[in-house]
Amino acid sequence: MVGQRTAALAFGAVAFALLAFASLTGPSTPARALVNCDVSDYSLDSEELAFLALINQYRSENGRGTLSVSTTLNRMAHWMAWDLGTNGYFSHTDSLGRMPYQRAQDCGYPTGAGENLAAGQSWDTALEAFNAWKNSPGHNQNMLASYYVAIGIARVYVPGSPLGWYWVTNFGTVAEGGGSNPTPTPTPTNTPTPTPTPTPTASPSASPSPSPSPTPTPSPTPTPTRTATPTPTPTPTPTPTPTPTPTPTPSGSGAGGGFGGGSMPPADPSPTPTPSPTPTPTPGRDTPPRISLRPGPNLVTWAGEDKVPVSQLATMPEIAMVYGWDAARQQWLRWGSGLPAWANSLRELERGGAYWIIATANATLLFEE
Image (cartoon, rainbow, N blue to C red):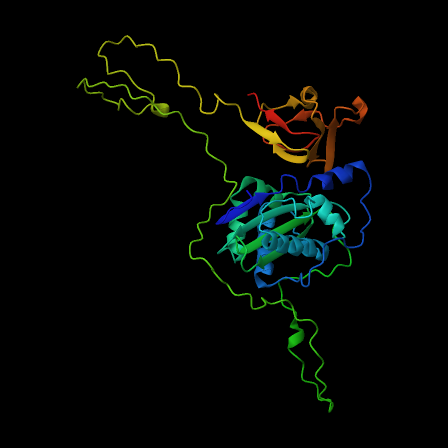
């Protein structure tokens, strides 16, 4: 992920975890003074506002609530975008060694936060970043998560950086009351109403709604081969071994059109059906799906069997806690190997479900199907 020179994506696999973790282990941490989160400007420009409109329309189309802009998350996103570009790396762990949940609280947010990253020499528009994240399952899940209510958006061009344009979105579960949330609709303050008063004191227009400061739409390098990582590598389908059947016997129903390109025997006029050959193994069965876990929180989509008792994970001492979101009851469920039975509210792992797994050391999770 680090060091790519064209275009890149990073999913918040370790981004939001302590948001869930904090909300389950106690009340939200009070907002703190800023720690290494200073930026000169974190207002939204026109493309950032366009992204806000795109994601809220997308969430509405999918039955999700719209996101309000958090000035704290805006500050966090802009700090991260500048940190990525000026320090020439591409990772959710910033140059100070902080993961997003820690960085969010250092920036004054009461809990942790989710995070999507994108970068590329020509990715200067909201639509490009939105489509890239929408087409990446992990990023898309962040954009549509029902438990998020707030967002911070940053689009920053860093001259001389490896990737040029840097996009960062941070997602939170706490809507900060009292925060000034920029909206896509321009404020009508710059159209002064003509008053017949003889004192033509032109009241200064209050801080105009952020328009795209003349950030050039540079495409510094005309070769923006947008390789949006991580695009999942398709499971290789086994190469069919064609059986050389040079027999000119005509087959009335297309002898070579079987499932998976499996070889078909030449048409036999005898009505006795020849037993079908051993079926080709289903793609992907040779190597069970696996996910590498890192110390700390990991967002995992369960790819194993459905309704698996979460207690089976007790065989992996590296797994300390597992969290899952119960959409029906709008609450987090948890399981911990060291918790008493009554404290474990997460019972089963559902196929396709998203879970936060807190690991104490590097480990590999194998999905036996």
